[in-house]
Image (cartoon, rainbow, N blue to C red; front, side, top):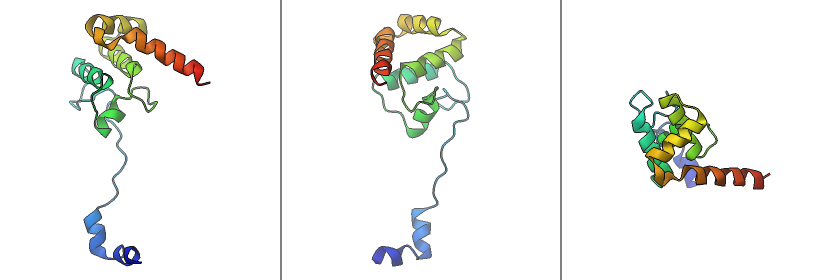
Length: 118
């Protein structure tokens, strides 16, 4: 009963604020929000995949294929965009520049998960 009376008071709504709108990124892949997708965004995404914690906005912006998961595929798609490479070329570039990602191993695990979940 207290909550029903409490929520009718005008100051209560001033206190809790208005509901926030859903975040829609200006540019997918721009996880540092500088207005462009570049190598800095790749480095930040690598850190997220290796265990860093993105903000909600960074998560939404970095999820390039919009599957609700930040993973190696999102990094490859950002590399595609930044370098203008194919998927295979992006994998090779990541293996050379970020060996700690274990790109092919992560991709093979994704493929196995997709086949076993069907």
